[in-house]
Length: 231
Image (cartoon, rainbow, N blue to C red):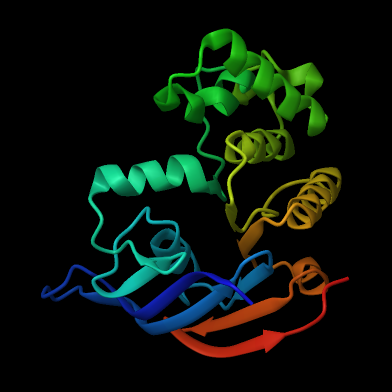
């Protein structure tokens, strides 16, 4: 079983050396195999989002190392890490993080801008993604004219526009409707069938039926790992 991501003794400390210091992650050792749906569970404040930020290279660990395909990326420059995210990792945020003044298709196409993709091709590719996610009537609408579920689907389309090898989702079913949850699950299972690796942080028990590996966090510590056959 090929390991795609591995963490080694990861610590994350905020406000280090100050009275308000917070140790969000403690000595986290994880191995994430390729082409698996991985669930990260734990109560609020357990470090789930912090761990996703470190795994996705958005944030750097205070101590420890992170490996991608066996390569230690923890000492890469910000530019190198940005390129990894552009080409390898798709991010689905809990709060959508859409640009409020841009229509849906431009939000989806935004990751293509640094790659030099021409506008006509950006629009074509983003429209294909939005149609796949049943948002053909929202292509030219800004986020304020969309429901929470529709905004999350735009966020999903944006995450997938570069056909990433790894998809990371932070509480993706929070505050969205049942139809959007079903579409999300269908998309995630389709991605897995195409040999993508999916990492989800969620309280939603629906993911227990689909995940093959579950990491349990508590107080920033890795408490347990469960393995199961996916449905």
